[in-house]
Image 1 (tube, rainbow, N blue to C red):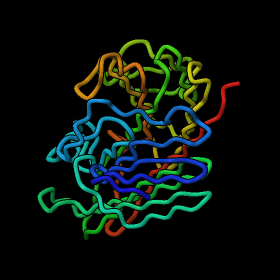
Image 2: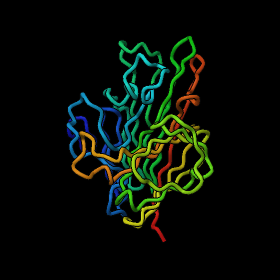
Image 3: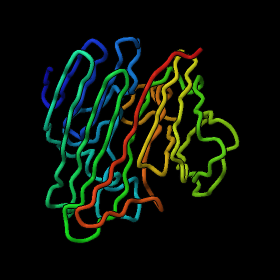
Image 4: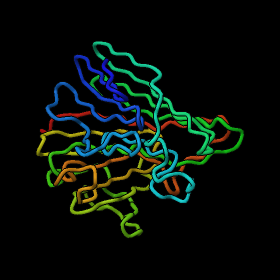
Length: 272
């Protein structure tokens, strides 16, 4: 274990990872069998503990985007712009485990708590647990805003979404995806009622990233088709966001002291 400011670096015989306590962001995860990281990270991030980190897995909680639900809170919520507490770390020969927790600042008036559980063996298991700490109901939306590292958007096919209805956030209309998803220009789509696994097939890196999820009723796919402030020229081509989420009509409602868990399991295999 190595700490550099708010960044914790963990490594064993199987994998290595970097976790930022700012935002509770798993910024990097690379199995030792892989040449390339599984997650993408913007090269112009400031890491100033003010702005959200672009890349890795930002935690969007307890609000996603600019939804009306919890619209008194920052865009995408405050979890990604808060300092998380590192509660536990364990590194063994065949596994890495970390636990982080977040108790909201009083200024947000949110009577709930979030805990992140990260477990790495031959795969990544990533779990966000929300507990309603109050005596009234708590409604929230959430997303594991994962930026997956790819060779280029032109080389990628996203499988597991065909036949599903989705909302195109760019025009607000609803459509049904007829085939596997190819990224051609800007995409920002919320797949409704989607609870299945997704595979990111990348011919450039000769690999498939599998994303299996639980506790999630929507899946977001996003790429802006342009460089944003945290990116070098052309860097937008090097990632695709595939996000287990619960948002819009699929928000989560917790009764007092009730718990909800959203999770994903990420595995990599060679493209045959």
